[in-house]
Image (tube, rainbow, N blue to C red; front, side):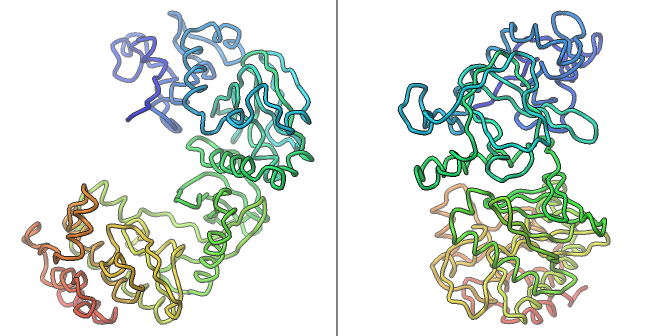
Length: 485
């Protein structure tokens, strides 16, 4: 696990974690029992901010609330350990990485100083603000208020920046901020902040990355209002986007809100791809393809408003069950063929068919997701992108995508669905790349002898190395799949 950070119960060896030596007689500590937003390790607040958890078992007795504990907790050795670790492990997001305390950088000469007393809430969730803070001395805790409950979600200390997301996007502040110790802060006013892109592009890039990092939280997040939509919880994340569960406040209907990561927006190519995805999916209307309702561009990024799908991806099902029943696999593959066929008739290649992008809803309905790499069939395209284990060999050689490469990706997906594994060894990337281009896939019946002939026939033909030997239409593929169905 590399840089695993120790939990409070591990440090104190209290034995009051679930299954611990003292859990039965003395009870389980609240800091160790709630795994709903662990973020780092196990337990509430990952067991890293135990001083913010009411009712913990410390010093041989049950402690009170955060407000009652804060006077004594900073004297705890574990508190000091966390401060020291946070000061060294999170250097990537430290503002002072760019601005050492005694630098002559012009931005510091234009900042004021603010002092905050220990135990003071100096920022409130929902505040409108025109300033961010850089911690010069001291530490604080961030608390999200959600549905009437306070959730301690993160910790900041020397060198960290506060309120940057609100200053950057113009949205209200997304958490309360309370001083754990006496603090000294530099104050970054919005007028100075707005000058950074032209005065120091490298610093601006760094601040944009901080904002992207802050929004990608595994802990409770405050609600965000995006036009008529309210984003409530993060339900998915990818390399260039974050997906929220949300609600259309006018129609009172659930939606999914896909937000482009702020650091990706800087690259106009990524932004154009994001816009293109929205345009493509909005033009499609098929029962097996996710629907797009709206797009928004605000808060220095872009959003795609889509239908909310209550289901599980095929990759999620495989993680739980290892394999998918033959009857269900055939059903899912036929529906996916219909989606690919419809998109092709509309002049679109998906280019990223894989188990993660196939969602299974109630009553076994399939939805094809994530058209972020999709292109027009008339578009010149020799870009190597998509989930690597599912890419057709000709794509890995730099050739353009076509319907047969879509077929190949679905064939590898089918192989994994029925065998529980992919056809080529992947530990060594060079060996994998060579085998994919030179060796036909193994017969899936070698792994599942009772595999129906229709599935065997589909998988072997779909995955042929030579594109000319694959299916040239999805209707051909569906005919083979339905032979024993």
